[in-house]
Image (cartoon, rainbow, N blue to C red; front, side, top):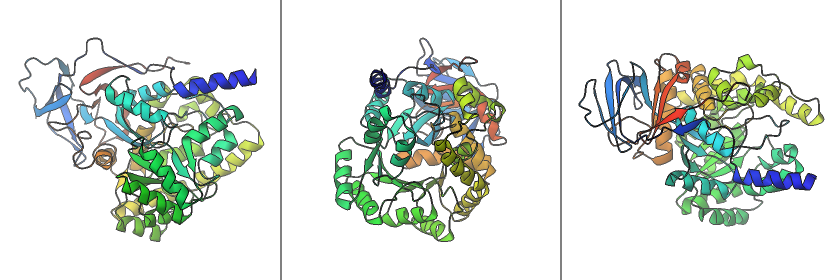
Length: 465
């Protein structure tokens, strides 16, 4: 019976389908529209226009951003009623094949549901920073071809780590036995030597990863030696692919920057980042995806009250997941996790000080949710992250700039065709009721979402679902 159950679960995991449909395409919806009477978010400057404007979209591209009353003959119209129109949000640290359930509540991920949840929240572009391989590359290609509905997807594939390094050590500790062997071999590549690293990268390059993800984390398992990190970076760069490094400490950040990585994913989460690590990061012009929200989420695992969630999170998370997030089991496994949770909670202010230091040093801060991780809802998690960045000292306009303009340029360079509202750009649009540059929680008050110029119908999860 256990073997049959394991086989069935593995089949579901491999397909990753099912779950609630958070968005659907409007029947007969075209890819052209005139969105009238909106205030426009200028992503380059992080400000909202004072006057009302019309945004004209033709065949999935922005044709014009014009004064209100522009000639829009032949276009269907939507009245924005004075709301703020932003480019679709961009999440540069996500895991499409993960679940927001806590580790003691085994729920197989619903990839399609996760994709819909990002769109439901107005997140129209996502970088998957570690998922089952090669499935995630097939998913990326399906989304790019339009065969599947979801955000525009970039993908790293597996995480390159040391034997028993992050996340392999966590997976061995918390995954059921019938999933462990399947997931670890597809989510990670465990490397002991520079030669192992070169072979792994060469093999991975055949899948055309958008970035190569390296796990450098002395706080969780055995960290990668500097020589192996350097070998990964050199092999990836030789293939024309950038590298990003998961880091857990200041020492990890220094090792990654010195090896030549192109971005840091996470800041040190148990300590304030050292002056030396901040200076090295700034000197190398390495951006940092700080992911404040995921660590604050870990800190509340096992003691989350439903009232702690914002409305958008409650619209996305399943009732059984919300209940499980507030009720940790009494077990040896959780006792160890609980001790780590307390350390993460104690470093709350240190992580904010790190953001302030990075900002003062001129380091580019990027916005990533790290969803779906425990308690971290896809889509809604990026809204939470934006608010946390404001809590850490960014202005709301700066935080929104990171989640649009900066993130788009990190993914696609200066020629990115998304992340701003300008002629010729992709018509991924988010309309909200209010001004999120005055109050970032307004971002949750979503009036409409468009993907490639086509309006999406949004469907919250049924109460109790």
